[in-house]
Length: 87
Image 1 (spheres, rainbow, N blue to C red):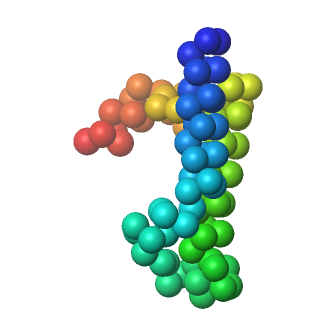
Image 2: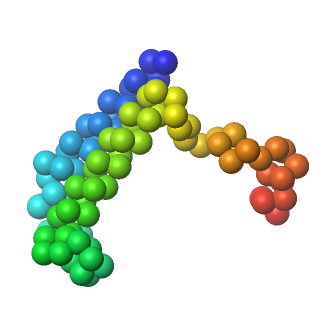
């Protein structure tokens, strides 16, 4: 449980930092044509904020046990079908 809480705190911190430093991030990586077209003016900034919110939400869902990262269990696969995918 401590590890889940620690991962949540890291993901929360990353999300907050992305929100706080959206402008330098956009200046570093450039504007996204897709985001500008579909999210309107300032779409690149909004896209980074949405990414941050998704990161925070994923961390919270991991904390409460709704999702797990890095396991085959979420896909409902047994060993046999996992071996077929890896081939």
